[in-house]
Length: 460
Image (cartoon, rainbow, N blue to C red; front, side, top):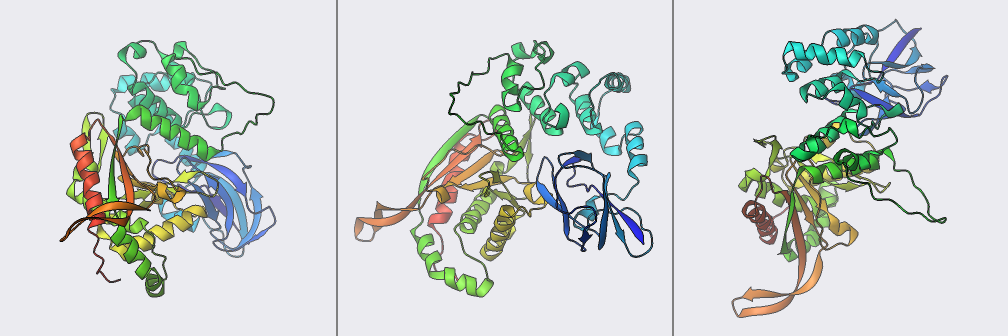
């Protein structure tokens, strides 16, 4: 009999730890190869971890809600055969190093990785001082947190004052980056008064953190005896923090156009049955909208950028995220990579696959990363238009509204006529730091033009 160590996998390039949400198996249970053993959560996504072997679960080393560093042994499985090295789940084996955690953890503290050393551009004397400061703190900071603090010149005193969303007020990467983003948007007068003077307690929520840092009072919430207090779940907290951070980061401007999508409406109705018969996929409006967006991005590449300090990063890949509502009421944004290289059939397959797996919590971490532009369909809720918040670090997001029958003026060879048409509003929110009205408005109009010029004679 052999014992196989189940290792906490690396779920993404910047992911250093994960929270155990739920054990799906108990000690003594038989597990099949690739059968899910537990559910974990990171700052990016929730995932199920499958068994790398068939055998019996003999030991569970961490409890639910424990935060575990990548590379740690979390369980052991007894199986027939010779002893083997600790191995991760096969679903993430490529990104997870096979190592002895105890030895490598010690090494990580003393010998920073090449990536960490390259990221830290401070003189050696400054690094030594900061590292010495860390050793005098009673609060635990991961190597990644220390590296970010060094890079951003954040002192230990300030670091200790930042509320953490992790277990026991532990500071996570998301907490620290939110602080850095908020600090960058403060005026010089605000910055001259360090956050350490405020010294917020661990009980201060992250949603109130920006108010605490800026010295502005948090609005009091009045409650009556019949009110119900509902604790935000982990994903809702992440969404709230991301939205607040986006508003702090980008000056939002929203432009609107109305498009006549009668041709698209009629073509889809005429071909949706054949599409299912030919490809086994439902034909929704989303891939059609996405095709128009991808074409317009190629026409206006400066909408497909990110901002890094005073530099504009022009993205060569067109990776379009699609906001997807979950059964819980939360939202997630899976990304279709290289959307401009896919035809309508390929887009439809990708849209349906990602949407289905998003609703069933089956997305992989890299499938919600790397987006360069986002599309959200507020029409699915019966809304005619919306003013969406930019999905950072992108600079624009497009909302499409409900398609409605409306009287509209139609130009014909016999003159202008009033006819019943299928009309839809499109709204584009964009970052006014780098996207002005001309670019934002022209891009939005081009998307509408592609939708109105849809080829009704195309075959599938």
